[in-house]
Length: 217
Image (cartoon, rainbow, N blue to C red; front, side):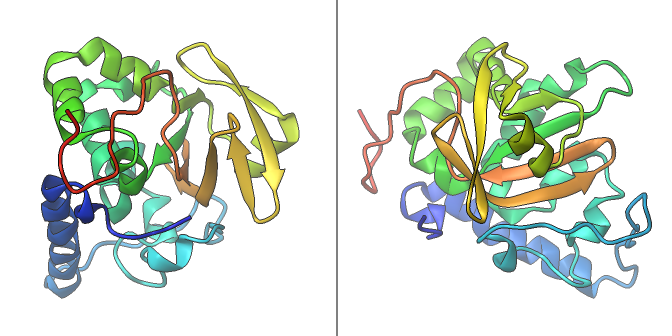
């Protein structure tokens, strides 16, 4: 799977991708460093997948151990490849629909996955005018309770919040979901949540990206 920058297709997302490293650098150089909260069991979370090496590690802000102490919505903000998905979750308010104390598994498509699926016009329209469709799309990426990726693969299926049952199969070092998406960095932990980054967008909405630098018409 290519991990090229989303910016080639979406100028607006390019601006976001350039901004995020700047914000992370500011966090590193601030006089008050971001706290590193250990995982609940006292061990550092272990994330797996081909994209993990390109994401914050060690003591960098946004590393897996730091994210383990954050609420799910805050944890997503620290992962620079999830700017589109994080903005959509925040705009839609879908996470707030979960009952208090309910855990959640988040199948989070990368920015590249969104760029390969939606034209910029189509995505802007969803974000601003079609909240119901947006919420349905996002619910296709949420599963009740916090499930490690091995548990999902072991079960073989999972039912997302939009009521659809998807297949989950182990494929070597990654896990395949709904015969469409593969995990690229799985098993981030957050407060009462698991976050698995995936390389494709799930759900029923049609593909509108045209594969060029221009908006699809």
